[in-house]
Image (cartoon, rainbow, N blue to C red; front, side):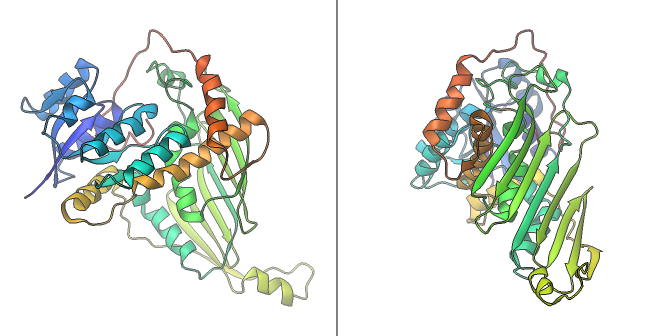
Length: 388
């Protein structure tokens, strides 16, 4: 069987998780042939798992120039995602980028422009798009059966992290190392799904707290209000300080309400769409009759291995990706707009000024502090590295 010869750039939590999936046989068309990391201990770890024949390199460039790989995963701290994706482009190497696509839209636009002429497969690790609940939600919304979206609401606060998590890496939760907090680390998947299912809003207004629940300099508590081009509105609430947290995603449409909560999907279908009902109803307190059912899905949720299998199929046979790399800018646009709204204390219209965002971010980078005496913790357990 022909296999993709995969190199991993960055053997931290994410890179280690991908190694675990491949070794467990979940990605039969992928062979990990090389790894790159600036930390020799992580190279030792990779060799202990993959065997002495693995290529081990102290820089990504050395690995990409070695001839040992024809594809790579970029799994390094956020600021470096576009840099190493473009290093792959320059060498004609297929590339899968971990989330987020980058820290600020200006650098991601440069990456996406380079992708147009790269001639390689370019994917984003949006593994939550494989979740049967969200795939079904998108199918219901896009079907046209229930009219237009009127309201969206996602409370996603089950990202709880204790202080020890933030103390486990010098780059974590710093403007200079990570470029943001819960929005840029834990929520890229949710922001991607929100826009993938509901579309992009046109206006964003955010209240944000920096280090509210932890000793960190970036955001750990966010409440956002958005407006869509058709006049619909939405809210997005997230935090790493709620215990226990919630994960409830509601979409209200002209003829139905769709709710994903506690791992289940519910559809409340109106007998008559509200825009029609309000015109014919003669009762001052009338309401459309409705029926609620739990929606059946195909039950599939292949996560990271599913994205990698689609990536391998795209490289080997030209089959579709789960998410094209160029799509990574959409969720990042939302998180950048939220930050900008909080920093400036006003509503932000999309598209916003990329240069203004960059300048505001750099103000915070200049005063950013790196942590000392960190206790780095790695996990390679499949399923535990969705939010690093």
